[in-house]
Image (cartoon, rainbow, N blue to C red):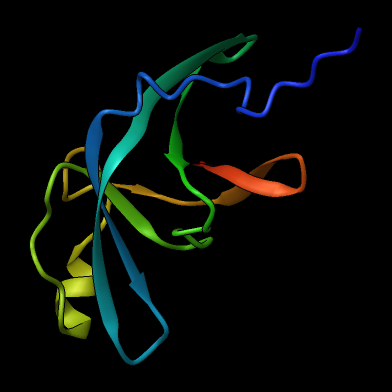
Length: 122
């Protein structure tokens, strides 16, 4: 007898963090606070003939049936400040704001034809 599971095989128990997603369409700046996300920072090291190189990356997982982030969005852990001007947007860069990351890819994940979560990273 074949038994089909109706629930996603993925557990979202670790998705208990709050993140702030900043987005711009060129003229307006929006801030979206998302509760129930998972943001993980990682550092990779590579040893070459000329020395060590390090790269910082991140993985963001947001459960839900919509895609709440886009490539180029800026994301930080917790509730970040409002950004309403071009100057504030320009000052919001990873080298000035600890923990801020810029989304380089967005990958929605599907289960039985429906989006169950979104993965983003860089």
